[in-house]
Length: 143
Figure 1 (spheres, rainbow, N blue to C red):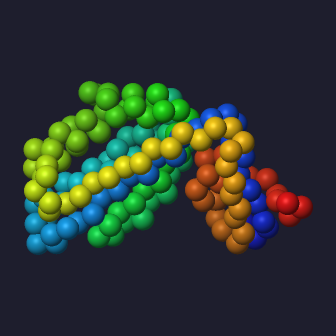
Figure 2 (spheres, rainbow, N blue to C red):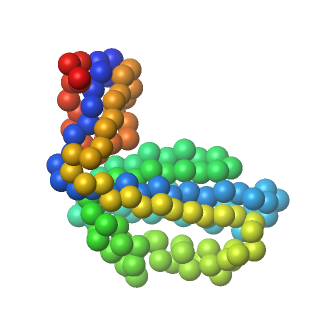
């Protein structure tokens, strides 16, 4: 826990990638359980691939699961998504095959390219969190 007022700094441009899923039909466990299991597998894989570009992430599981990821570049994010040897592509293909547009489970993502210096954040009484895990924390008492 960091009790001081701090802000996170990160060098250069970076990407905020928000991804998630929503269970629309709870009784269709065979459709949504593979989706629930896929994201943690990808995140575990990315932890073993420091050059892939993932800087940090936060995840909130539930009927609607949300993950916020911080990436070094859009190119690295896209390279991981398209890598046939990585876990994403098989998971995406399985989702398309098993669920597609049936409506049992929904998935979404949003990608934002953040240019250097064009962001703001403040953390008080928080552990390292969000961009504070991806960047360097600095005291912001005077700001």
